[in-house]
Image 1 (cartoon, one colour):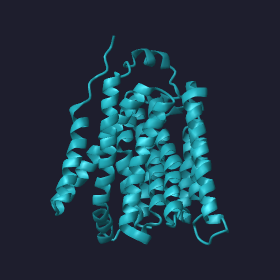
Image 2 (image 1 turned 90 degrees about the vertical axis):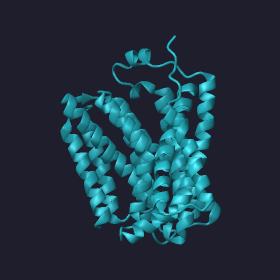
Image 3 (image 1 turned 90 degrees about the horizontal axis):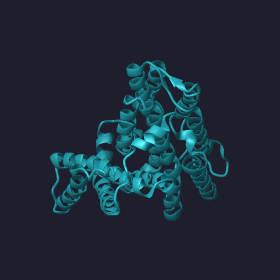
Image 4 (image 1 turned 30 degrees about the vertical axis):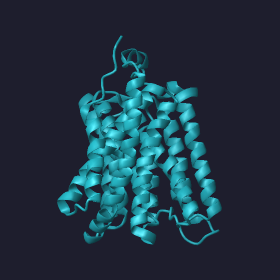
Length: 361
C-alpha cells in the first residue's frame, strides 16, 4: 500500500519559529531587522498552516476537507483584518472591504491570469469543465455584488454601509450561498469540478494520511493559526505606519493582507496549471475567492455587530467598475472550456490596472 509522505521539516519548523519570534517580541526586541524577521515568520507560518490544513482535509475527506481548508484560510484573513483594525482604530473601518476586494481582484485577474498564461504558453491550449467554473463564478458574482456594491445604494443608513439588520442579513445570505456551493462541489455535483481524466487522477492519488499524522497536523495547525494571529497583531502597527509614511492609500494595506493569505493557494494553482491540470488550478483559485468573501464577510460582520464597529463595505465608483469588469471578463474568458495565452494576458492587464489605479487613484 502506498504510504502518505511524512510531514516536511519546514512545516514543523515554521510554527516553532513563529513562537520563538513572539517570545523575542515579549522580551522587548525591536528595530527594523526584527520587524523583517517577524514578517518572514508570518509568511512562513501561514504557509505551514495551510499545509497542515491540507493534510487534515485529505484525512477527513469531502465535503469536510473543503471546509477545513476554507476555515483555515478565513481564520488567517480575519485575524489579520481584526488585528489591524484594533491597531488602527476608527480609521480602519474600510479595511475588511479593501482586503476582500483585493483578494477577489488578485484571484480573478492575478492568479487566474497567471495560470492561463503559464498553461497556454506551455501547452498552447488547455481545457477544463465549464459546469464547475460557471457555478463558481455565478456564486462569486452574487456574493461580491451583494457585499461590495449594494451597500452604496441602500437608504436605511447614509453612506456605503449597511444598517445592523442589513449587515446581519447579508452575512446570513453569504453563508447560505457559500454553504450551498460547498454542497454542490463536494457532494451533489462533484463531477462538475473533476477533470476529464479524473478517474486516472484518483487512482494515482496518494492514500490518506494515518490517524497519527493527521492528529499531528491538526495540533500544528492550531499552533500555527494562533501564532499567525499574534504575529499579525505585532506587525499591524508597523505595516500601517509604513504605508502611511510612503504616502500610499490605505487600500494598499488590504492588498498586503490579501497577498499574504493567498500566497499558498497561488503557488498551488500555478503548479497545477504548469502540469496541465487547469481544472484543478481554477478550482483552487475560484474556491479561494469564494472562501475569502463568503466566509470573511460574515465573520467580520459578527465582530462588527458584537463590538459596535462601523463596517464600510461599499466600493467607490472606480473600484465597482473594475470589479464588475473583472467578473464580466472572467465569465467570457472561461465560457468556452478552452483557454490560450490571450485570456491570460487580458486578466493580467486588468490586475495591473487595478494595482496602478489603487496607488495612483
